[in-house]
Length: 205
Image 1 (cartoon, rainbow, N blue to C red):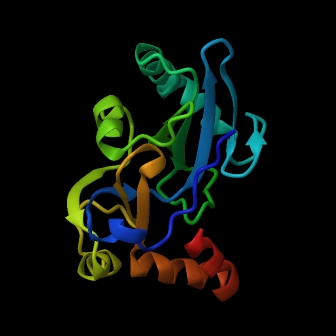
Image 2: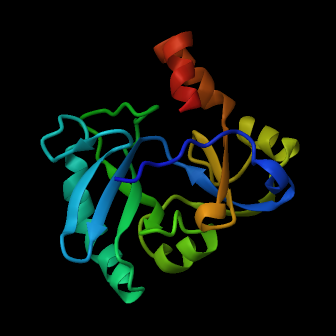
Image 3: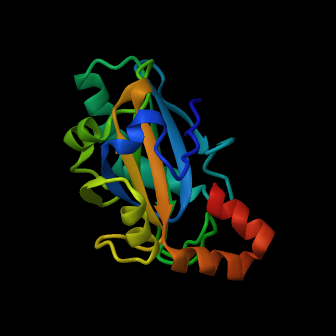
């Protein structure tokens, strides 16, 4: 199953000068769901492992996916004659922090990327056009990705950011480039709760 790529803090190469589409970065667990025209939704998992509904922490995500995302995603895939896809969604609750969750929280599952078979990840414009009516992270608009913008995110001065930060995207498919910026208050909280070494790994992931 296709894994979600790591996202750095800077856009690569010539893309660093381009305007980008910016989305709120939800704080939760990155999950993936794989669909095939014949098999249907036949496997899913965390960012690095295939799991199922018996998982003690993430198992409840499967029920949310079936109830809220599976049917509309399959309909869109069939309408576009995709021969398969992997859908990426964030599993999160009001007190989730750096992939850790509070059991009693009411969770959500928010679609944030889709990779049709052999196409790579959809670009932000096509993603919004196809999936904008589903539960997705907030779309914040088009911005210049530069030091001034990153600093604005760091001091939590950009409207629409829930807490962790933002994801920037430009291009599409195998030419898609992405970058992330995080809120300093979120960074400080992670380091305080998990310590310097473990916390830094979470911040960088």
